[in-house]
Structure formats: C-alpha cells, structure tokens
Image 1 (cartoon, helix red, strand yellow):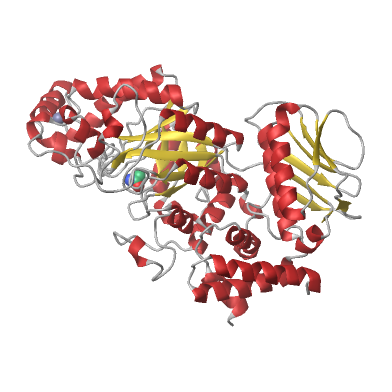
Image 2 (cartoon, rainbow, N blue to C red):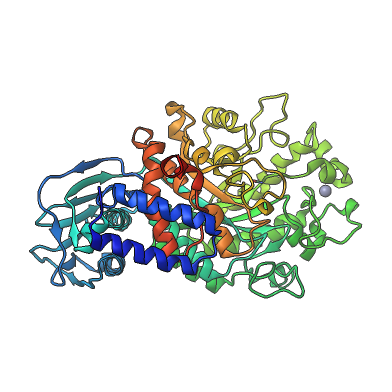
Length: 568
Ligand code: ACM
Ligand code: ZN
C-alpha cells in the first residue's frame, strides 16, 4: 500500500537527515534507504510491523482507533509506577510530539492507564489493550508495565501514518517471555567503556526486553572494578597503556560509586547487572598486582598486563583464596544481583598447575589423577566463599579438557552452579549433562550467540582477529535456545549474547557488532518458537533499524537479507 504523501514526506525528510549523520558505507546506506522505503510502503501502516521481540499473543481488534490529544492523561494509581509513566511520557513526546500530563489516582475517562496489580517483579507478563475508549497496560509488576510500554512504542513506530495523526490502532496483546534470563555480556576488561556508554547500551537492550547485563570486569588486559581494600588492583591493573587516556579504550575502571549509579540506572530499566570476575585463568591483570598468587615454582618472569596470557592463579596457594575472599565480599555487597559469574574458562592447566611443584604435591595429597582435577579443589574453596555471601555461582561450561576429560563422562560441577554453554559444537552435550546432573543452564553457544564473530563475508575483517566463523543475522535467528528439545527446556534459564572486545574499542563498534543480531537473540529469549519466522522477523527489524539510525546508534546494515526484495 502506498503511504499518504504527508507520511512519505516525513519518511523521506528523516531519512535524508540521517544520511548526513552517519559514516556507514554509502553503498549500505543506499540499500538500507531503499529497503526502508520499500519496507515502509509494505508495512508502515501496520501496527504490528515493528514488534521485536514478537509478542506471544496478539489479537487484532475491530473498531475505531484510540485518539491521543493534549488533554489525554497518563494515569497511575500511585507513585510506584512513576518511572514507567515518565518513560511513556518521553516516548509519546518523541513519537507523537505530544507531552501528556501524568495523573496519580482514580481518574476516569479516555486516558492511558498503567495498572500494576501487585509488586511481584519476577512476573514479566503484561496486557496491552487498545480500543477507541481506552489505552491500558496492566501487569503484575512495574517490569511488566515497562515491557508493555516498549511494545506500545513499537506499535507506534510501525504504524507511522496513524502515529503521525495521534491515532493508536485497536489491539489486544497478552505477553510474557519464553525465558526468564535474557542477557547480553559486555567485555569491559579487554577494552574499557565509560559509564555513559554502558548506560546507552542498557537503554537499547531494555527496549528489546533484555533483562540481564553481564559485565566481564576482569581479564588479562585489565581490572575494571574498584576494590577498596586493594586500591592497587585498579591503580595498576586498570592501566595497561601508560600513554593512553584514563577512560578507555585500554585504561579505566569503575569506582564503586559509579557502579552503584549504574546498577540503579539498570534496575530502573529492569536490567540486572551480573558481575563477572574470571578465575583462575584470564588473570594476568590481577597477577601483575599480586605476583604472590602465581605458582611460585614457575614465577620467574614478571607478568605484564595485556601482554602476558596463559598464567593462572596457583591452586595450592592460600594467598589466592584469602585475597578473593576479600574481593568477593566487596563485590557481593555492591551488586544486588543474586548471581556472581566466576569464569572458569580456558584455564591453561598443564602449563601452570601441571608444572608447579606445590600444586603437584597437593594433587598427590588429594589422590587426584590429573592436574585438571585440581579445578574441583580450587572452585570448591571459591564456591564456598560465594555461598557464604549468599550468592549463586555461574561458570562457563567447560567440557573438553578441564572438568571432564574427553574420554569420560564425569561431570563434576556442583549442582548449585549455573553453567553457560558457549563452546561451538558442545552445547548438546552440555545440555544433556546439565539436565542429568541438575544444573541450570544459560545458552550462549558460539554458533549463534557470539557477537564478536564477523557478521558477513568480508565484513570489517579486522574484527576477525582469530579466524572466527561467520555468524550471519539469519544464522543467529535460527537459534532455538532449547535446541529443539522442549523436554530439556525447564532447566534452561535463558539466553546470553556475548560481546568479547579484544578488537572492539569504542561504543560505535560495540553497537555495530551487537545489532542487528541482538534483535534476533532478543526474540530467541522472549518469543515461543511457534510465533517466530525469519520472513516476518526480517521485515519487523526494518523500522527498528531506521529508529536506531535516527537515534545515532551504529549497526551493521544487513543488506544481504533485503536483496531479494530490492535487487532481484
Ligand atoms: C569464553 O568465550 N572464553 C567463555
Ligand atoms: Zn601452583
């Protein structure tokens, strides 16, 4: 259907403005613009055309539209929904150009109602009802209301012409997510991101109903969290580049005050921040500060932050447990999240514990066969610290060489550890073993959810710093977090997209690598398989990409998925 000339003028003007602001390759811009205009003519009048993730129950309704005027109020019963009401107010001002008043109390009339029936923040369900008399979002929690507002924002975004005339098309949406855990991970250790950038990242992810941000805070290249008891951790560990800026990309850290502010900012947008402190490998930054934590019999060359890799904390060294007891106590006090992620990945065991005389003595004493068995001892001690701090541990699921030798099916992870499946090819095994053993599982399989992998052949090859496989948007969209096994779904907490930042140095690169694949992962986490189709998804992302462009957010233009409409 053709757009009315007024609406198409608005479209064209906005698109023309956008081209001045972004340095995305011109060829891609042209393709995108054609797509958007084409997509616009296909779907701009449809209120369902920009929904990402797709809600799980949508009923089109007959009847006249709800008309918003400057006399329409946003009504809440009490101040507990003030933030959500203000979000809605901001969104309507941007999308319709009307700034509505917020009213608290029992108001009747043709208004917009936000109604939260209880304060049970675990419940994410919402109900969005639009008819000519009323626009109402109801939920059991402010989180549900927040998600209803995000859905309304997308209804308006897709329905450009009606929105321009302040009309909201009737609809009934009853929605709740497939998975409770819908996360993205930012690696701020390899390259640091200032707080303001992390906040922008949170704004964007929350609009697609993500609810977890994992911050990878420590690695070989940097220690990014202030620990009051050990100021040298950041004084030394956060500055690998003596000549670089203090605020990234090589240097920088978050003070505890900044983290409190960031955590509160995220919580308002219903995003929980999970801290990750990766041990016992990926620890060059902390080992440069505390060389006494190294395997002493190997400790001949000084550790250099960002240059030294493959070093580990010594399993037999009491300093490690003492120092981490103190670090974890501060971390647990700072982050309200019920979880702490402790890494546990890619430990180079033979090179460290295998050659350390005191680790070998400990191995014999414990009756272990292999040096890798010392992982049980190491994490046994660390996990007991975490349990005493009343936190739930998360670890990367390692099956190939560390916890479980290739020739056996020993699975030694304690049951209270939530595991994250990540290694390409190993997810089905990880799924089977966690289900048998009773561990919860988060899905971040390399095949689908690694956002540092290149997105297309020859696309910015500098990102492919170690020859990682191409993960196209279409491939990511094919991700079913249950891997087709609905019976195992109960022990799967959800989805995590990981953005490792060895080659990602600023916010534009962060969002470029995250989006649009982050839209596909958002839908994998939220939407039941029966409501997901690639053909519908690739149309629904168009208005959202257009909005990102307008908002100055860099993303990769997925020109390959539009070529069948435009080029053939
Ligand atoms: C990982 O990618 N090393 C978890
Ligand atoms: Zn040792």
